[in-house]
Amino acid sequence: MTHPLQFTGSREAIQLLAEHGFDGLAAALELLLNEVMKLERCEVLQAAPYERTEQRKGHANGFKGKTVHSRVGDLHLSVPQTRDVDFYPQALQRGVRSERPGKRGHH
Image (cartoon, rainbow, N blue to C red):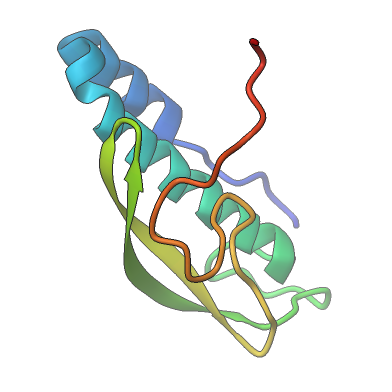
């Protein structure tokens, strides 16, 4: 890609946590996951939104809403869609509507 992508979610997520503490955790996580999924789609497409490159694979094709039930509450996510290339965000599992068990750093 000719220019770096802008990741704006971290600043907004930090602000949510600073203002609302644990009550802002679900909203902050929603924001971060949505941004991460958009960045991942750009990597798969090998192009930023509206960028035309010879390396580009497929095209962005909007978003599909998905609710995931997690430990911090329901997360209302906007899952990026693509056209002409297979893509599904690594942070999610296809068809799963609740948080997948993950490895934790503590025992």
